[in-house]
Image (cartoon, rainbow over all chains, first blue to last red; front, side):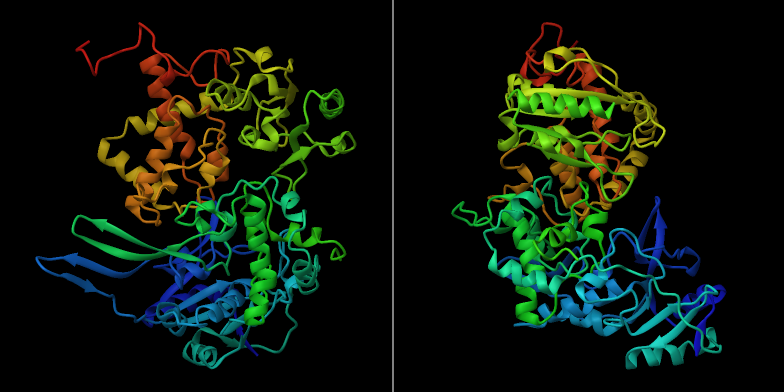
Length: 333
Length: 275
């Protein structure tokens, strides 16, 4: 089998950049691991679990220019940026990060294909590292995934006892990647990978049935009582994809932007009339749960959650969707 | 000590003095106790008290379900925050009870905790202990000593991190406005996208709106997922207010008006009259 030796990981990353490809990988900044564009392989620091931020921002940026405009004498000149992306490699994300790409693909190719998302998906090769550790927030096995799921990855690196990684190709793009960088890999005899054990904490599929039948349940008020109403769980969620369109002007010119938005905010659903169909926290929390575990599976056939655990890990009051899933009567496994 | 907290919580609920005790229970990880609402005497045993009870529970005081009569497991800063909320007419001190505690090293497992005497807000008039104030003074001095261009770059880098999740606002006891200026969109006063200009506008207006009101409880910075130095910014404004008006938010007693809601003969008026 092909192996990436631990000591040669930086050689591989340097080779990727030397070949002219841009690179997204984990770095350490002020004590937190972040996925970021890197300029040098020396910057890369792999986290034990995963990074605080998600890789979605390299496909669906926090704020992206859709067009720019400039008012002239009797006209408005509009320029739309070209939709093209130079190839890049995402290295060192986890299976829960990669699986999210496959989930979001569906909504961004539903009624109208999202050109920039698709261009970046096309340009990216995703090299995932399977997990050898999990923390108290991880729950991939509760949403039908696993610490070594292949979904969304082009190549998966399976951690070995020695600290090296077995290299497995998942897609054609991944095969081309492994061929291109073969010089940074070596051949070893087959050894078993050391994969984390992630206990199943809830059954999201069974929960979906309960959710549908109990829309008016008091569960949401209880579950969200300590919720502060910020946007952290949505902005650090690998599958949350809601956005707002805003024009930001600078005198007579400006830009139209597509920017992250969050169903946690009251303003998200506020009508022009002043009426708000989701006027309180419990109804907004219900929306978040229903969207992930009921509406999305109904529409696209997949749960819109990968169990990465960030909604709990990053939450100022340690909330997150898992707590609500496990509070569903009869679903506590 | 936790027995004292639990028994006081039980007494307050039993006597009907309050309908809810806002305290802490164990979180999933050791370093973070989570807010917990106790309405039933039978549930008081869930309450915990350790150095990971980080403060900030005053944020719940203005919620309708809580404002009608609640006890707070409160740090000195929380007590000051509750006092500001009374000064600003958001809650009445009659409806507030306090189970006060002070930790000499918050966040440190070895941090010693002691309970504070008193139950009503008035009992804590002039409680001044507050470790955070002293620690941050040196950092404020360091930033203020920077040349303006360097200070600009420092804050620019801090605000560039902002993702506009508004966790700072959500965690702040003083951010109780029914409609925040950042949510006013007819017209859009503050750009909402996470870009430098809007990020600057948001972070500055948030800080300005807290001048003379922020008690430096640090809840905003602890909530911030990007580690923006929000307490430092708040402390810089608090220092300005202290120097100009000899006023520190939340000190004194609750029936005194806040600095920007009152006038004293000694207030400086350099902006009106020279000297």
